[in-house]
Length: 115
Length: 117
Image 1 (cartoon, rainbow over the protein chains, first blue to last red):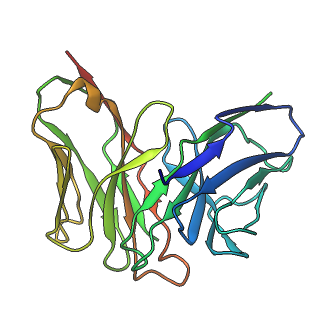
Image 2: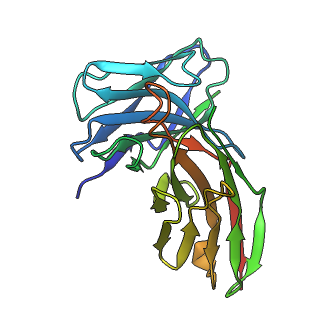
């Protein structure tokens, strides 16, 4: 079955440590996205990538970094510079076709808790 | 910039009641509109979409009509079930936006629906 996988589902880290969240897709989608979700809020875009070896900052990129070395993979690193990293992180990829008319598919999410 | 406004929740209904969740938007061009659903502890799933004015998206008994004149995309269902309890997000994608924004989704804050027996 095609889809998006994120691992781990739950992640605990000590304050000041960097942590990397995994996102893999086998849908053959070019574009991938990382969102952050906080309780009672909508999704906010962290980074996105429209093609391999290229990515752009979203609305809240400070304290995060990404790489896109393979089409299937778009890992997100939450660095110690992120002031409030505890949140639910969602990865998505976008179906090919006319940009703006095509939907995004989401992974199951990773809940990060910084102690 | 683009924005989406949803009615605040939670919305609490009895099973078989009629559901409406309001969604209005602001966009520079002619956006596509989406409804996503999120069950507890999970990612988002696309529920339905509409890509041009007067289009009606429908899925699993849910419907929404793209109303350009009122810039709205309200979600409706004639008879809700307990299994519909979830958070519902309205979102837009503006293909006519400025460079780089065409691939982005702008989300509302979500509306929690609770359906009781």
